[in-house]
Length: 399
Image (tube, rainbow, N blue to C red; front, side, top):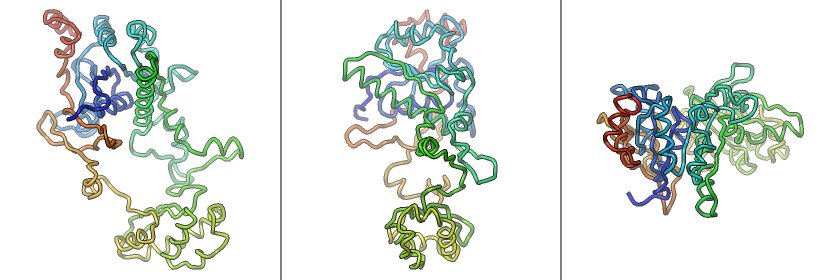
């Protein structure tokens, strides 16, 4: 693999589960050396999450690709000393413990910054490092609720639902990775120094809430759950088909709406001046959705229906399960799915490296590590001799 854009950047990852490790995975995908510090014996709990093969989660294989694993007991003073030593030679340190934990371990931002002024520290937590809720535990589900996402997800009058994925974690991880890249640019291209990045799970999601707050601040409007529809933008919905499945149709552009109405044989709606623009269509969205549903239910060939819509340049599509994604030619043609052989010998499919860069693309350097696979190599490189490592291992500080 050719030299990647983040080659030479060393990252120490102290986080567990999803948010911090996802940020580190993103950096590793573009060439950063990521040293993942795991607790001895148990490792990152993600190793045991969801479906396991020979005792290890296949999710782990995707989340920890290209990383190195060392086992250090951070609860012990000697383990904390090891991390301080690693931080002295690192560019980035990532943690996602509850605020105050790193301070308790003698690994505060102030301490690490004094040891290495060039260090960039990404701190991911539920509510951020300060504020009245800072000490509360915050997993993705809680962050999604606090950010307003859960309020919107679901059908009117029914219990809110989650997306089925830990969006709060991964979106916070992406914001954290962006913060690291900005801090690296400030440090290396503008002659700056290291800095601390405070990324809260809820703030990453809150950043994606589009018009919610502006509309409330000006009009007092509170957007309510709307199921598959997109409130205030019409038409855009999931429409039932003849066989009980659904397709998505987004006919909310003015010209697109007219083409859609021609497709479904509703010339009267296409030519109605009151429906020429979005505000007029929103006022009559029930009527428009009913007309589209009448057409979709009457079509017995979903493929032919989608071909008709695509020929008219109307954005539309099936709702894909992971089985359909794995078999979809477009994913294959763009290389969006990659495969790695795990340490157990099985081949695991996973999302490839995104985004796609024309000159400095990302890539995966090696499979996810076994627990403590790189402890000796990393610590030897950091200056610890064999006798010291043997002593630390005998006392359970490393593994």
